[in-house]
Image (cartoon, rainbow, N blue to C red; front, side, top):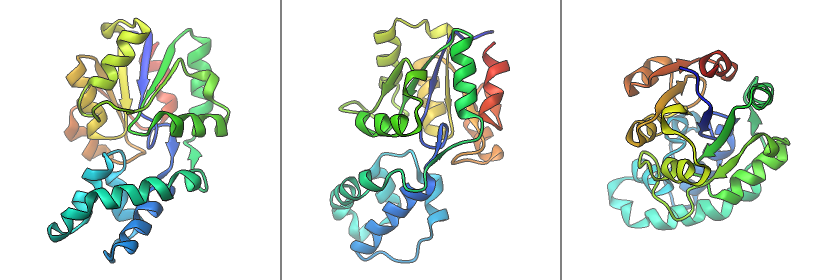
Amino acid sequence: MPYDTIIVDFDGTISDSRRDIAGAQLWVLEQIGVPGYREEDLYPLIGMPLVETFRRLLPSTMHDRLEEASELYAGYYPPRSLVTTTLFPGVRGTLEQLRALGKKVAVASTKRGPGIRRATDHFGITPLFDRLQGSDGIPFKPDPAIIHLILDAEGWNPERTIMVGDSAMDVLAGKNAGIATCGVTYGALSGDEMQKSGPDFIIHEFSALIPLVS
């Protein structure tokens, strides 16, 4: 089935922001006295809500500092969010092709809206999206609230919409919203790990989205 409307995650799907995000998380861990992690240890957690991320990283005896850790990150990361971040290969060209084909594309991210806009403006891709939706004041994925918000606000048909993301939360959010799902294998999860999430489709590069939705 061709899909007219596409909802994409941002970090790990559109942008390779792993080093900037993990670096900020490592800085927070150092500030509160939790050593021993490497950047690559944190990559699989990218896309989770901050409190959940730090719940997994901090020993249980320090769970009373989860909010503190999240606040430290929220202050440290934004001005450093685009130091090493890049678009994944083929993203810009694929978004341009989707636009030329008349497809509509929205972002559904755990980032706040201003953070998404900062990144899309930086890369010059803001006009290629119909909506940039952050998780400002709404539940995080895998709750489907962000997808329902996009569908309702844009008047998109769920049966003609597909959710594309690099994490289990993205896939589950799509499933919970009753739309088709596509997992990518170049972000947080490997092909085998993504398969366990049970998406309807799996692609290994963003450009493979074109034949999938056409």
